[in-house]
Length: 128
Image 1 (tube, rainbow, N blue to C red):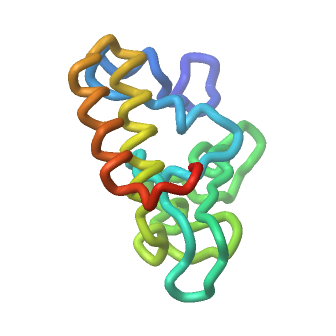
Image 2: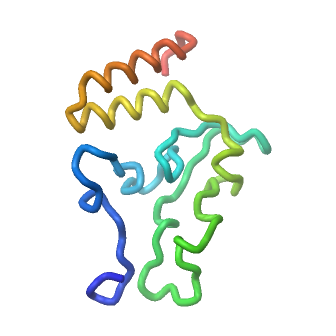
C-alpha cells in the first residue's frame, strides 16, 4: 500500500538497475505477457495478436470490490480474446528483438547482439 492510502504500483525504480526491464508494464498496451515474452496469434480462436491493457495489473483508488491483481489469476489474459498467454504462440523473432532492445538499453551490448542474431536466424526473411 502506498503511503497516500492508494495502491502501490511496482515500476522501473523497484527493480535493481541492470537486472530486468519493466517498460512493457509501463506502456498503455503491450504485446508482451507479464513476464516480458512477446506473444502473437491465439491457438484457440485465431486472433492475430496477444495484447494487454497494462492498467489491468493495478487496482486504482475508488475500485472497491475489485480483486487485487496479485490475487486474480485472470489478469494475464489477452485483452482482445480473453485467452491465457500460453494459448498464444510466442513470436520468436519479435521476442528476440525486444529482449535485445532491453539488453541494449541496459548497456549489455554483447548479449543484445546475441539476441538480435537469434531473431535474424529465426526470421523467414520478410520485413518484420
